[in-house]
Image (cartoon, rainbow, N blue to C red; front, top):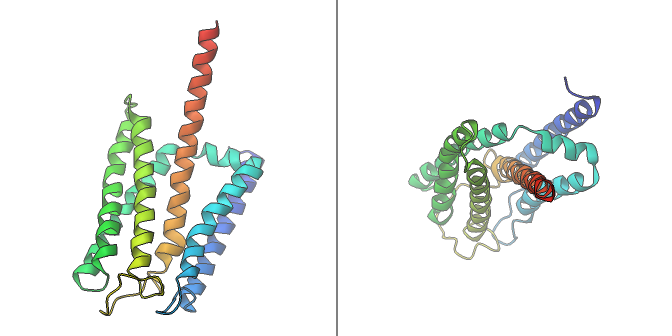
Length: 218
């Protein structure tokens, strides 16, 4: 049974997730994430950056939330990363000329690689292999690096004021529905999953170090 605190935090988070999704859905429908050739993609950038920053602030200041986050099953967080294989769709869009290769190749291959590796890392966890913590750490670091690269190449090849390597070909816009849900909801949410996983690993490492220090002091 969940404690009253955990139930309250769970209910609040569920409401926040629904509200967040509806806000970015409405923003995408209204064209709020379309930047155009004369403006930088600030709306998408803010939509990507703000949720992890809000998460970090809540984690530092809200004790019940921090306890909830650290109690999430790390196996579930790892299994969720397998969904990243759908990033291969970027390569399909590239094949039809809908996305630039500078963005589609690193984003598509990176997402697919992380999603493909996730079940193997989960298997290492379930079998309690000696290196499973290291594998989980590298999976999450790779996932974060992939997101940073995708956002960077996406911005530089976009039809916006900072699209310095954009070409004149007609492309599908990442600021239009339904693609806008990827950088404004899916990517920041999965970024938070990565951060939570790394926080849990750091706590495990600290617990092991404390236990070893206590044993050494005896």
